[in-house]
Image: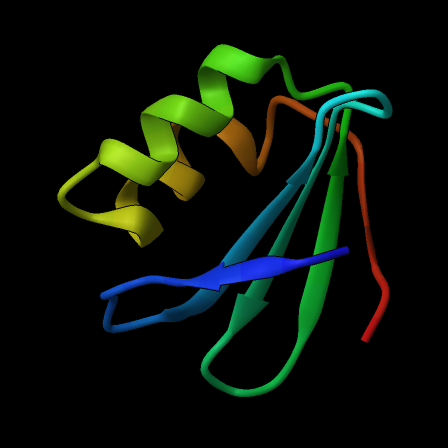
Length: 70
């Protein structure tokens, strides 16, 4: 999955697969997580959020199933 770099103190890059509704997040520590069933509008919102990490923790982390993939 292609990820785009983001300005964040915790997140390095974010990618999204529209067909699979999968959000992929790479953290500055190198770990990569995929969040499943994330609708398009949530991807749009995290990309526009002033704090990517805060948005992730508040609206995605405990709301969607995920797995560590890297």
